[in-house]
Image 1 (cartoon, rainbow, N blue to C red):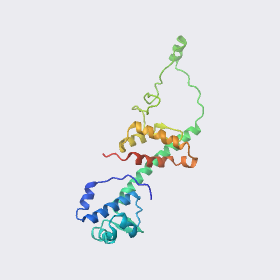
Image 2: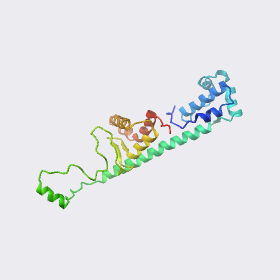
Image 3: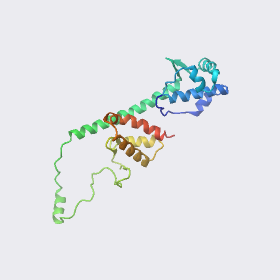
Image 4: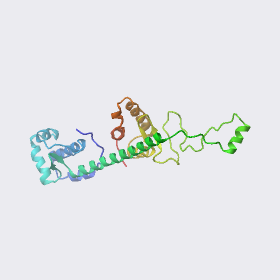
Amino acid sequence: MSKPLFVEWCAKDVLDGTAQMDALTELAYRRVIDMIYSSNDTLRDNDEVMQYATKTGKKWKAIKKELVEVYGKIFIENGYIRQAKCTEKLAKSRANIQQKADAALAMHEKRKSLKENKSPAAAAPAPVHAAAHANQEPNNQVSTNPLTPIEETTPDSPVSFSKTATRSTPWFEGKVITWSAGEYDDAMKNHEVTEAQIDAYLKSRDKWYTTQPERIQRGWMLATIKDFAQQFGTRKH
């Protein structure tokens, strides 16, 4: 069975759509919906299995016919039980995950390319006024870098971004995983999670990936996005 995806759920729509059903038919329909979502739209049309899965026993065949012909709630396609709205929401969820994975891959490849093409840079000459000041006070050193675009944080704390940070600015850089500011913002907006939880999750998962073979490490992006969504759920807006 495929990994379940997180999808939008409108309780009122379901209640309105089942108002005319008897209790057993509604039970079967509700369980069919849950099984379609849980199986990622791969619920097989197997009457022997479904009579137990829906808890309707030998009445399942009659109930299935009613759901198809009377209520028009489900249909059979290529040996699978389908529900139009479920298929639509699952497709939307998969597209959202793929979009994030593609964005993460593009960022990863860009950073990889920059690292490979980067050559040792010559030390930039110090400004005249800084050199003069240094000659007067040899032991005096600049304590902060005015060009640093992120705020200071303690060594073990998650990074907090200033207003000059962009969505492509790295928020977390591990040995395998790289998480951008944009991905951090999306995670905070769309999932029930705190900044500290994101940081702890990425550190733990990155540590695990360092123990895995390269073929596993190469798939970290899509696998991490899916696992993150399952771990923290979808925020209710």
